[in-house]
Length: 458
Image (cartoon, helix red, strand yellow):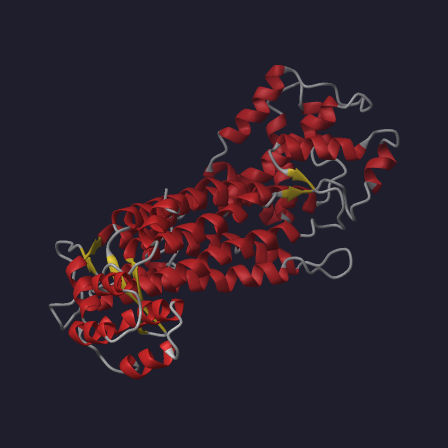
């Protein structure tokens, strides 16, 4: 087979970024789809052979079972190419798999007479929908979620290490109540953990019930067989959740749930990337330098936050696809139309851009170095943020117009520590309350930020 030159790839996932998403090739490539189709055909055959009322197909011996399992486990690109060659004649990809399997059965006398039980009573979608669920199981659960977990762990480490490092907040982009860098990072950790749980909780569903979901052909051949039970056993033997009700295609509602859940994770990470980009811009974070790396073709001094920018862009691309998948896939005219087929072939593209975003974001997090001095200098330039605690204490002791007095003193203008101290001395509040207010600085006015950071990052 000709090898794809990455420089000639149309998609950057197969070109520029191929190495970063290579693990998904075993989940979403056409090779992977073909292998999973073989796996599903064999799972169905095993279930048929185990059914007591299908006397024409005897129970499989251990050697026959090992033969089938070996064909799946050793399934190669060469095998997929052989299936593809058959498809050139059949012009039907699933039928090509059936013919390939029947040809392989010739090598084992036990199986050779029973080739017609391959794909028995199945519509192509019986094989495809189960294969797609297996591909998502491999690509999302075995590749994407571990990468997400690694990013969450890296963020949690940053949050814990910076839990007590005070930082000025900027609500509406303006100086606001202080926080800590760790608490702001911990907020993303908590959000991501919650959103991740929704991805993991979506059951991957599959059906095996014939042309329109009624087991019509099955009953015509074996009217006394409990076909729903065999269908359920087959799906569950593959680690999936049985879908008992469908038309020709599995309704894809679970896919919509899954892709929506993935898009929510990506949206949170876009928020994270933009915030971190801003903190780098403010000088709260520095980025570790990499030898040989160039920040600008004309400005030698620049160290650009490219990892977070790349991540943001790729999460956006992923979400455009994920939301289309979620909106389109549950819709099919009457018992079946083919609009889902070509769309489903792009599941790997959506997951690929999500994975690429995760890889870039983790690279960016790995380069971050907090600049506590810059954060402290920023805080010490904004003493007006202490207007909040001062007016709140004044209100406690019934000082009339507390908010309005501090508004007149601080709104829209910088104020010095000395001016605040002088104002505090004029207040008619208990002396111990005055003493506590005099001890306040922007750097210590962080509430429970450190405790929250440590609690929700561990």
